[in-house]
Length: 434
Image (cartoon, rainbow, N blue to C red):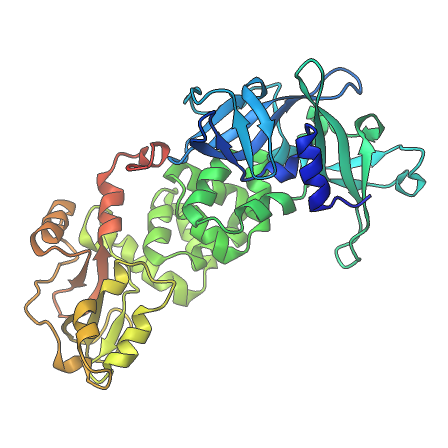
């Protein structure tokens, strides 16, 4: 049986819907006010093969806090939204209980066996869960009635047909079975596909540890590095221990040097040194230089990869460099001009050019002709307090760090400063202004 979008809309109107259809739907109060978006469903297993009961929705507010909304509060499930009976919901952060299972995070992509007499081709072979069909009963309870499965095949084999079977004909969806390692993460990765790294990190922290690590193993090094950089220190350390030395070194290579240095600074020295030795020397060298400085100084806060140019670079070339989508807005606000070499630590530091200045100059002009030589520099030994005052005094979001021999060794950005000024648990708090 193939699930079509038109069929889903009809099923929603009839109080029957497939769970994956709810992912990301806006949740509305009785007056049409937006409360948040659906991020998961919470179910509880029952004795034998009795249909699991859907307890409620995990809803993500605009502040990124995830809360629990009981299904009894749901008036209707529409093709584009979930309607609630009231806009007054508990804002307490969702915390999964021992008897609760998350549909998207834990059930989808799990292995099962099917004993439906009408689907003999699925007997005695593993299938993977791709969706759950839930239905509203006369008692106003939502129950899991059907399971959409696909026969599990080898990595290079064509995807098999999807079948929808009654819950009673599916074996393996128990709390014990779902705790076993090796579960797929395709559905979770689809949910994370368009999210910013900070939002993926926040979502991963809500997952059970087993699923969190399975997602980490499935992400490529670049994406995982971006996500790890957004995790609190304790979670970063836990992630490194789970990944192991070889994969951990690969992820560190993909991280920004300053973030990699901060992470290694949280590890025991022998463990950090072991990871540094496994890293490519070209990637480990700037991290080692950063580790020489105290973390609360300009040298410990800085990145070793700002935009560095020679005086003979044209304005057009400079603008092309700052358009790099991998640059943060803070780093792209200022380019630094030096004598060769342009890799940190550079040749003699000549000055900087502000992005606004570049936008005012003819494209063929040379950056050497518009250098700001008057902007004071930071020293690697400057304290966090001194760096904070520097940004406040000169209204900057990025500043050069120059050593005693006049070499540019890096740049400090305002986000690095804020990360050290905010409380350690700031990532657990709400996003301001939303």
